[in-house]
Amino acid sequence: MEKPNIQSILISKPKLRIFLMVLYDILFAGIAFYLAHFTIFYRITEDNSAFPLNYDAYVFFIAIVSVAINVTVLAIMGNYKFIRKYANLIDVFKYLLSFIISAFITIIFKIFLWWFADVNFWIPVIILYLTFSALFSSITRFFTIVPNYIKYVKSTYSKKTGELKRTIVVGAGYTGSLLVDRFINNLHEGYLPVAIVDDDKTKQGNTICDVPIVGGIDKLDKIVKRYTPDAFVIAITSLTKSQLRGIYNACAVYQLPIKVTPQIADASLEIAASAISLNEIDIETLLGRDEFKVNFDLINASIKDKVVLVTGGAGSIGSELCRQILNFGCKRLIIFDQHENGMFFLDQEFKKKYDVEKYSLVVGTVREKDKLKKVFETYKPETVFHAAAYKHVPMMEISPTEAVKNNVFGTLNLIECAEEYGVKKFVLISTDKAVNPSNVMGASKRIAEMLIETRGKTSKMNMAAVRFGNVLGSTGSVVPIFLEQIKKGEAITLTDRNIKRYFMSIPEAVKLVLQTGAFADNGEIFVLDMGEPLYIYDLACDLIRLCGLEPEKDVEIKITGLRPGEKMFEELRYDNESVDTTSHSGILINKMQDIDLVDFNLKLEKLLKYSLDENVEKVTETIFEIVPDKFRNS
Image (tube, rainbow, N blue to C red):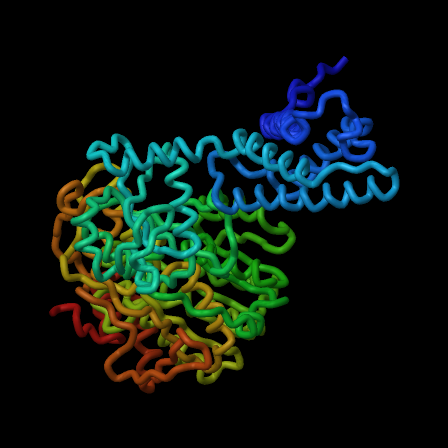
């Protein structure tokens, strides 16, 4: 015989709490009714004629119905659902409203009883009963508010706050007021609100829960000196990234912990104080640039109900391309990559999220043309996103033949197979390092762009390349490297204090790439609007602060000097390239100079021969014959 499950027998803690609260309310309501009855009729002893008509005979029935009305209304109004330790003014309002509604219903019950049963009882009994009941029942719900407020006042005026962090709340709106109220009533969370900052001058000089609204962000220095905070909480739910970065930068100079509430799409949406989480600000938010809106018509043109092939599908960009392509409703996705481990983990992730019939994984390299032909013959893709490439600058400096075989001739193999098997759209993922390249990797990607430009002019297939800068969080990029160094307690290594790079989050870059596919025509080079470039040193300082540490004090930033092939700054276009806007903000189109196709093809033949012969010197020489090395020897 199967043993009974203890969990199914015992009442769960939440249900037990509700059961006890209902029991307490029934008990308190019963006592309240008796006290109201006694208070009104305490002089009446044996003279039943002094009572209202037939009241004495029905008093027990009246008490039961009155208690039932009270408890039922409390339940309907949600008074058994809120968490007592997070009780706030909204909960108090709902609680009091419940008793007002109960009064009206009880009066209707009184009229009904008098009309149909000739039984009467006085309205003062009802009012006094519900007043007593409200007072008694509030003990089980709001008993922590008064002592918490007393504790808050004592902590505010005490120089020793113990484990409490003196907190400045930024934002005197709905969310800010909820958090201030929550902090005061829940000091165990560790936050002691001492001041509120808001740029709205109409709010300044007022208070929220007795906490003063003392000024705007522009007065933060004086406010910090006066209130000596230990932490900041940014409690504005409708900020753009650039606005949030501005507030963060103003607070960050004080080297204090900074928390932020989650952003919500609808700032007018009412939320409970208990539902507001306090998060760390992530580095993507600190880019300070607002993301571009998605044009679904553009994405549908190249993705919706199409068979799509993504090369390099297990990489940082490639895997996000795959996620979004599946999310945007492709007919089938072909994920192609030589990285076996990456493909394994990607499959583990996708099996949990997507129909396994919607995607196929193929392990292989773009350097094997026969393998590519088999893939195109089997799956017949209509759209190709080519993200397979060697990308690490120092590695390609010591392996130029591999850069050429993969980034150049792998791309050529893919273009030729796509043309042969009737692909409609072909998009190459390129990089800002392809502009005035000072390294082999960048030059190899520029040659791949040139393949798109030259073949695109004569091909029936719509082709384009998309050029953008660094993406945050990609494998081997600065952010994960810096975070690992901070985690290990090591110094952050930076090649130069003044080095700058363009940055964009991976999801945003991929959304723009997918939309660019709709513009692909005859070999254009599209450029994503990356905003302003960031100093890598500033990025390192932001990451250190996000880890709760102080730059140059807790974590050293060590300057090591530029690596082979590394530039101080990257560019998104050549000086002789003009740029036009497209119908989508965030996507620009470069107007390239004509390429001498005969000369280009002759040099490609030489480059192929030298790479197959593993002639490193000749490969490097030929690469920079094709792509002038403006910065390489500077």
